[in-house]
Image (tube, rainbow, N blue to C red; front, side, top):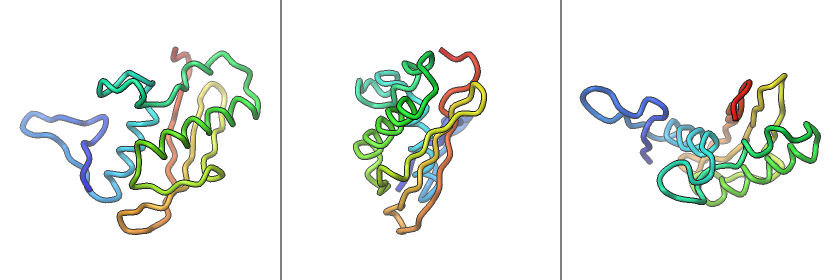
Length: 123
């Protein structure tokens, strides 16, 4: 499996390409860092995290974000097998993080991925 490296997609001479487990990580970071409709011309690709920026920081909001992440992974990351209970969302100050425990179908290893979803005053 191959993937374009994100955010270092291009250098002066060629396209940076990730392979294997690194490709799965790059796909996951790209998916979780994108808002819906923001990338690839697909109105369904991405996670609607910014819409929760001013919502209450409680278990319900974090659970809604985790549901959104899980459903997007099921559709756009078929190389990962993720259970709903293995997606966690938490915040430290004004920074929002997600952790995803997934079985990578490339080599059937279990990996833990952590992604920063929002930081500071992003809107």
